[in-house]
Each structure stands twice: as structure tokens, then as C-alpha cells.
Length: 333
Image (cartoon, rainbow, N blue to C red; front, side, top):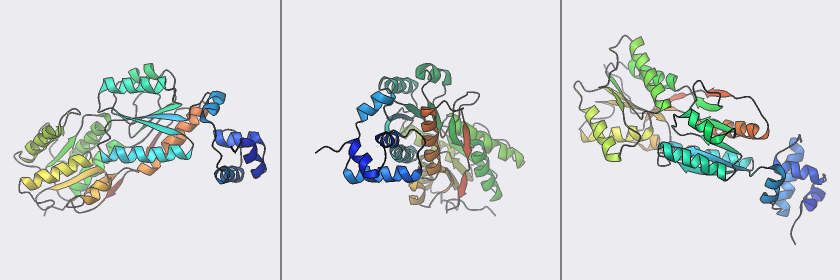
């Protein structure tokens, strides 16, 4: 026998309309009532009709997520956390990886709209903000891990400029004077580079230039990335410390440094960003700037849910970064 919403309401001792509100996450209901209704939904094995709910509320309970690179552990971890938070509120997450290609980004946005998602999360490096606005045409959007400067679009991010400054300052405090930085030329990384360069200036050291600021193109192959990093390691004078703007670059730098018969951190120190599980598995374990992924995912889904259900004002929230000390940085004496 199929369990109905009437059966759930009877078991929970509430009106059918209350059960409907709990299922659709609408209305003002006490946490005690929500918990009781959800308990009986699980206990009775009631399965709400997603199609019927969507027709009644003009909602599909679907969210689109644009990320630049699923192969990067940072973004795969972020996608998993966002999916968990979305499921907790009854949403399903559709994930598309764009490879930093503008045409793919716009194509996936159009696909999300065709599938009538309730909202969109953008974690990609997309720079053409006007194109985003034209395509989505008022659909609720939240950016994560990035901001939209001068644009009135909500975002949950970190202070990337401060992260770059913090990383460089940490190395300078360990008496390093010849620093280099490796980054993809996307907005967040450009801010990290800018912060790093300012820390060098504030310390009274020679300004960084194109020889020790390596921008690796987003479309570069694995082999091309290795070549660029190897060239950086062979610079004269060679850097005593390198800031890698993601953990994959950090892992590649450690690997290539060893191939060049450089000991990490004895001969060269390396600091990374993001602090995925990869950072702990490196040899040596990576000193890194940690982004609060769990909090970012939770706040992003919470904000998007609010935007879906009401016309809330746009919000730009910056969360704190944390420097995690491990074994890949050593002082110079």
C-alpha cells in the first residue's frame, strides 16, 4: 500500500498542509515539528512526488554547479560538500566542469536554464560577468571561492589578496628573500599574486617580476606545466621559496625539485593553497593556506536557498583563511 501525505500527517499529529510545508521547506514551522514530521516520513517510508511539488511551487529542487576542474582535489572536495549541504535542504546538485573554457561555461549555463534549475552556483574562473548576467536572466546565483568585483552578485569567498600576503610574509619571516609564485591567471589567483608582491615590497625586498611570477595558462597540458615549473627552478639565482597557488602545483613543484636534486625544505621551501588531503600525503607534508571549505559550502547553499525563496539583497561574505604549518618550509640562516 502506498503511503500518502495524509498518513504522515496523522502519525505526526499535524495538518497535511504542515507536512507539505516541511517537505517543500516553506512557511514558519518550529524545529520540533519539522523533526517530528521528518521522523514519520522516514518511519513510514513516504516518498513525496517531486514532479507534483515542482508543479505546485514552480520549483524543481535542482541546483546547477559550475566548477573549472573536477580533476583538482580542491574542486572535487568542494563539489562533494556542496552536494551534501544541498541534499540536506532537499536539493539535488547538477555538476558541470568547464576546464576554464568560456564556451563550455556559457553552454552549461544555458543547459541549467533549459533544465529549469532553481539556482546556480559558480565556482569557475569565468571573467565575463556581463555574459553570465545575460544568460541567466535573473536566476538566483551565488559565487563560491571567488568574487565579482564591481558587480552586484552574491558570493562566499576568502580574502585571496590576504592569503597571498600571508603566505609570502610567512616565508619572509623565515628569512627567505628570493621568492617565486606559480598560479593560473584567474581572478582569485591574480589576487594572491598581488598580495604576495605587496608583502615583498613591504619587507623592503626587490619587487617581483616576470621571472619569478609564473602564470601557467588554464589550457596548458600536464607536460607544459612541468616544463614551466622546471624552468622556474632553474632560474639564476634560483628561488629559495616558492608559493604554489593550488596543491597540484605544489605537488608538481616538489616532484620536479627532487628531480633537480633539490631537497625540500633544506634547499627550497614550498607553500601551497587550499589544504586538501593531498597536502598531507605529500613528501614532505605541505605547509599551506587553508580555505574553510565546509563553512563555505554551508553558507553558499544557505544563501542560495534564501535567494530562491525570496528576493533577498545581494551579500558578499569573506571567510577567514588559516595557515597550516607542516614540513615543507624551513628557515634560512
